[in-house]
Image (cartoon, rainbow, N blue to C red; front, side, top):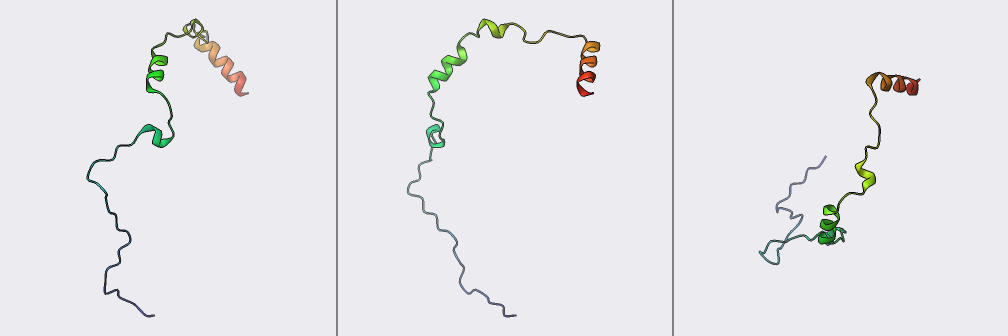
Length: 73
């Protein structure tokens, strides 16, 4: 088996920076095309009356266990 030794170092990549200013990413660069002000207004909007009511009625632990065991069987 022949072994070869490189006499000069191999450069895999040579990065040259065009400027020394930092690069800032924009949300549009990643495909998130949304308006920040619109999202802010939507988050501050009051919830509809339907969401203020509890969706599931409270159940006692014994009733829940019975329903769970019936579901699992």
